[in-house]
Amino acid sequence: MVLEVNLLAGRVPIALSFPSLPLAPLSLAFYARNVQATAEQVRLQEIVAACAAHLASLKNMRLVNSGSLSWKAHPLLAGLM
Image 1 (tube, rainbow, N blue to C red):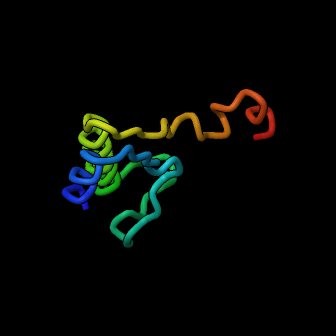
Image 2: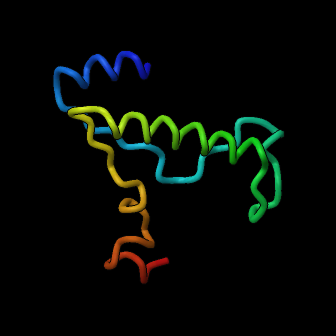
Image 3: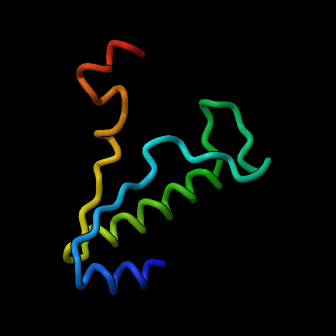
């Protein structure tokens, strides 16, 4: 998929949004207490971040700042949580 996006970004502008919510567990290997990160979760986050970093460096590529989509980041909605 990254190869196709690379080729397409060379021709037209593209906007992408990566996950803004925690990634869902894929198996029982991800089971841990809510405050504890597993090695698998951290590795998956690392892969997603590396992909986003690569795509953000491409010409015509625009990535949505995932932090700006958070309820806590929005000044009008922060008091609702």
